Length: 399
Image (cartoon, rainbow, N blue to C red; front, side):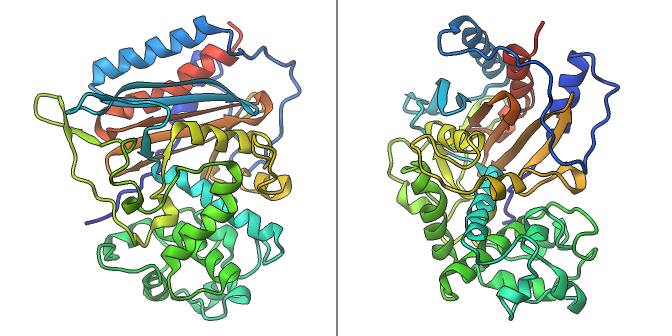
């Protein structure tokens, strides 16, 4: 069974936005560093702007009905404050259990930005730099090319420039492999480019980065999967206050807040999907976290607050957090895709796994973030594509 941890670019999202705003002739600068615009501040709605949030809620409900989406959870944050949060539809269709802000969804590849934040905390700790060759921190590491082995860095792995091709995952036996098998696998996998030369979206690449962090921090070579779950909890989840977020599915299988996922049958109605999630998933750092929308809002606030959680905890330095936002090849940073329009950066990522589909994003200059979680990848594609655009247009664009 091949693991599906999709990254669906936000290029279409931004293109639609630009057309709507008459900006279709503006060019993106994919290799430019983020520079915040100097244009006058736009008014941002607060909790009292109920009519605007009602319009957004109406849009979600309309698309859910049109596309037969079983359940959706949404949150919008302004700085440290969650200004809108709501569940729509059902987390369990058969038992008529509604989605709430506590419903746990798979977040797929949006997990990659959390792995990048975790690694940023280790850079803060002085264990390595973003551009330290990996062999200097883990001498036994090897790629299939000796020159590439000496060159490759943590930045290369997290920004999808390691030279490991996307389709390498097709021949990796995820069902029986353990986390340390990834290192044996990449040592024999032909590279399609030297590190830093080409972009190729790779779950293997991001997972290697997460496990290298475990090596360097813990010196634990025996159980990398457990080490990753422990380190992510220690460095990211607990400091932010994400107490219900988990890597292991066994921890929540009987949790009443754990939502089911769905596919559509021949008549277009949702049918419960067979789960593909399992403990010990060797690609865990690429996207096996289960989280509710309330705690994802805390995570986005931590991004907007440059590494300080809403509870006041300094999780990561501003310097190393913002390093993950900087776009490089294909507008990709480290766990984020970045686009600019009118000098304003939209930083976002989509994720799909186990028939769930999600998108998270934020606009640093405007101090706004959003998260949309759904329980049907098949049914929710339109909602995930259109909701961020609708939201940005509704809240932030002067008409």
